Length: 229
Ligand SMILES: C[S@@+](CC[C@H](N)C(=O)[O-])C[C@H]1O[C@@H](n2cnc3c(N)ncnc32)[C@H](O)[C@@H]1O
Image 1 (cartoon, rainbow, N blue to C red):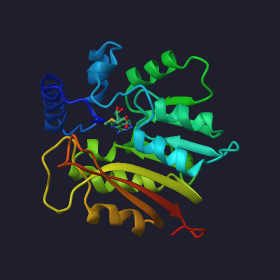
Image 2 (image 1 turned 90 degrees about the vertical axis):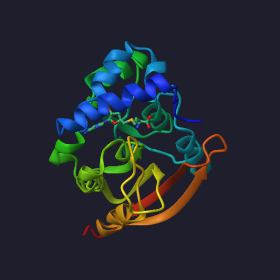
Image 3 (image 1 turned 135 degrees about the vertical axis):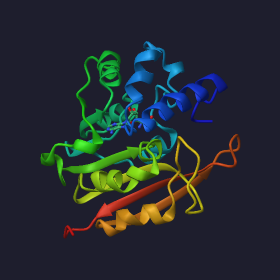
Image 4 (image 1 turned 180 degrees about the horizontal axis):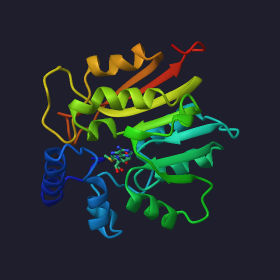
């Protein structure tokens, strides 16, 4: 299983997330979780200290050559996906809303070429619009509730350069009914928004892990057409 789910940790996440949602601050609990983890990755449910396996698999299959093109890692957590992109030659920017997570990345990778920055997906620098040749969105949309979904998808889609790629890794739900979360899996109707925003779906892979057969995950590669809508 790729997400650690010991009962105590699951309950802690639920509690922190519920408190934040009650304050209409859906991203407000992440820095608390990182900070309370006290640099122990076992206290961060999604931390693996290696690239996400579906992202690593995509790198292995596609062998992208960065050649100093720009890449952006959204909600970079502890930085392993960003480091993997830097290793294949991208100029990588990686951001997270949590200052503690960003400081942790900088401590783990002191000589890294990655630019680690604190930034909020809900208030991104307009200068980033259509600036990145490769954008990695791994498990962040699903970590935010449905009432902000459309805003989050808009913000992510806007980052992709003309002819750039967005790689999305997410849980998927088959129905449009509201799921219990976090995480809140994405539906086809929600995913269709990327296409409405000018991103063409070029590849979709589906995964079900033997240890967790009720959870379907997707890896979708989108490409922005030459003409920006
Ligand atoms: C479920 S974790 C996934 C981390 C990483 N992408 C991975 O797959 O391991 C969600 C990440 O999104 C970050 N995050 C949450 N809200 C955010 C926001 N508004 N802006 C930027 N990052 C945010 C959290 O701090 C956390 O690191």
